[in-house]
Each structure stands twice: as C-alpha cells, then as structure tokens.
Amino acid sequence: MNKILQFVFRSLEIICWIWIVLCLVISFTAKTVTGMSIISSGFLGGVFPVLIIITPAVAFLIWRFNSEKGIREQIKNEKQAKYLAKLKEEKINEQNKKLSEETIEKLMNLKELLSLEIITKEEFEKKKNDLLS
Picture 1: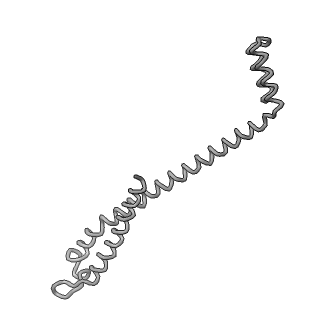
Picture 2 (picture 1 turned 60 degrees about the vertical axis):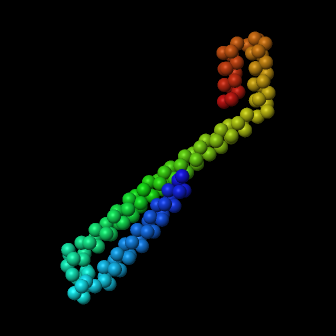
C-alpha cells in the first residue's frame, strides 16, 4: 500500500510541475483579444487568474515536501532503532561468549546439586551470580 501511495504522490507531483510550467508559459505567451500579453493586461485580467490556477499546485508541492520530510525522519529513526537493536544483540552475544565451557559445566553441576537438594535455591542463585560476574 505504501508503494502505491508513493507512486500516486509522485505522479501528482509531476503533474503539478507540468501544470505550473504550462500555466506560466501560457500566461506569458498568450494574447488577449486586444493583442496585449495576458500578464501585461493588468492584475485582474491576467495575473490573478494565473495565481488562482497555480496556487493549488504550489500548495500540493509544499505539502508533499513537508510530508516527505516526515517520511525521511521516520526512516532515519527506524534505521537508528535497528542499529541500536543490532548493538544490543552484539553485546548479548559477547556476554554469551564469555560463558566458557568451564562456567557452563559449573552451572550444570550446581543445578544437579540443587536438584538433589544438597544446596538451597538461595545458595544456588548466589553461586550462579558469582560465576556469571
């Protein structure tokens, strides 16, 4: 859906640019009934209608630029969040690598002692924390 909206807005943007250029070209080259240029025929005769025609296109382009600015900001934030998640994952992986086979073996022995009720759960937690730190 997002790709479709991007295509529609890009198309409208292109149409607006063409519309603005076309209006300006026509307003500067077209002649009134008296042979005067539309622009030189006065504010109400030429400039005002051209402004009315061009204003919606310019408004759309300004709105489009502002919305793209928001989209760019959102993409930047998403990339930053992905980067931070990747860093966090790498940190967790490093911590996991620190647990050597010896530490894992000691933890397994402690679990066995706990399951055989030779040590209490509190002693197990304390020894486990000592091993992991």
